[in-house]
Length: 231
Length: 226
Image 1 (cartoon, rainbow over the protein chains, first blue to last red):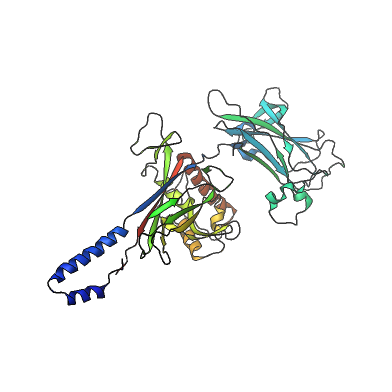
Image 2 (image 1 turned 90 degrees about the vertical axis):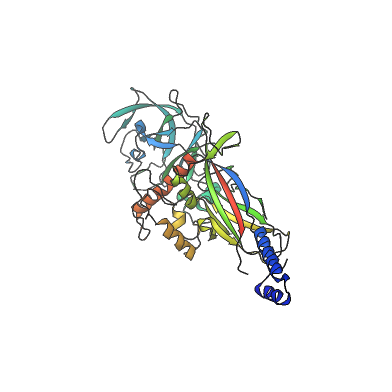
């Protein structure tokens, strides 16, 4: 139906007599009716699910704040050729999770992660920096992490290059990170609750590394991550 | 008449549910019922839904996947309703990883060229729930906008608006204090961290209180003066 405009109405008014008023009203009504018809609202609806936020947190020994884990400045003077860091993965939903350690390879340290548990006679000691209180832990079994992109020369191969650097190609071989991934871990719940706090010991060792590492102030980037295993 | 093949299917990794970092597309069709269809005004509205407790009943509750859900109370959760507007963004156009033609305030117009009766016109909306605060303020490859356009400026103005004095606006949320002044000029590491914190707290608040989103699209022909 063609839209009625002002000139049409005027023309009709002049040409017709008595039925003028009626025609006018009829036309006007027509316009309104047509307009109302197009005016009908249409509605679409769709529903979608929202994921609950991750409830994992990495904390230090004794569930202290994450800032307690300080990997900076490893001096090589200790006789045991190892430095360790106690951390925990804390959560409030019983979902399996993974731990990942990603590190560059400027320093040929040997990294390993063991499960840990609090034990008075344990040899791994966590000192709370603010209170000075010591908590002892023992190292339980190895977590079973493995490198997913280690090449034959011990450095990272190219398999994760795109994921890390995208299309950027000039990357020094030690800046290519190695990814150390744990198997899926089912958390140990505390009592009747849904909460858990699993402890681990990250060991950084230079025992048996040849040629021996010297104090030449190299720097590596180390990332410690925990995420839900179901995603 | 509007009919749809609408879905908020999450494009990232085939996940069935939404979270920060999700992106997707909604396609719907407008079918003119007459050839002189004028400009259509579309209104988008997102309503957050929560899961009901076992003995709870609420008028307007619905059941999805065996879960009984109902809309969040608008007065009690005014912050969530507001934050959704700034966290789940809709754009008419997407170019590579960047977006343009922002659907600000949920309203946009569609004009069909040469509308033909019963011939469906496809309309696409690209949506994104940005993962990080940085994606808003930066421009270029990993950001929302390719460059600092007028839309970018509008968004920045909206983000920095804390004139309400509340602990939230459409983008930021603080569980503990009023937001205070937010200024993006000369951000240093500390302020960037603070604002990122507000953005992430908002995501956390949305994710903890909301289980489903209901997306509604209303289409009305705009009045033309004849």
